[in-house]
Image (cartoon, rainbow, N blue to C red; front, side, top):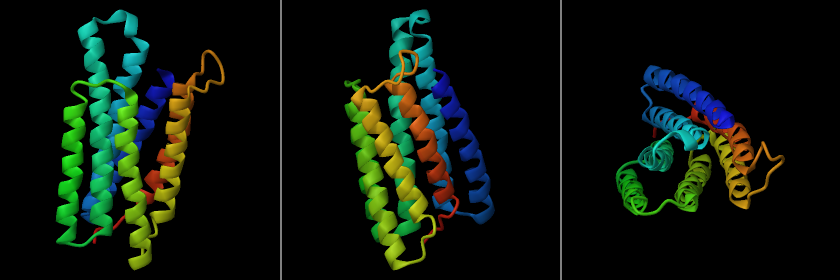
Length: 202
């Protein structure tokens, strides 16, 4: 719970700073990444509440907290992918790719109505992050993309975090695989934040 709440604060601070940056520069890509961090922060807060108060809430609230967590992560992944599209692809291709991203989000939302396993969240997240790596690599080859190394590095660290989370590795009985996942994510999110500040709309 504590590592979840720590990740919450970090993400919301990054979101607030990116919102300010995006408004000043009138940058859709930066604002979308701000929304992404806001959703990640929300997911961490709700997830921490889910883990910390399991024995104190009704089953209906327990299920609702978990559903809110997985949907917040889905929206976060979509926002980051959409922001990367605005920063990497020109119209009219960008419209079609945004439609595909929206379709992925819709399919994920429908699927998670009747599924609870976190691996489906990881699958959706990793597919979006893979697409962002490809977009940023493309942008760095076709135009100036100073944020690409930060973003790609951040994504690679979050992939490591996801692998750790799925592996069940624990450093201590009071510091399990979820805690380790959150701490590694913090480092990855910092790099993503640094890269997001350098995004520019195309």
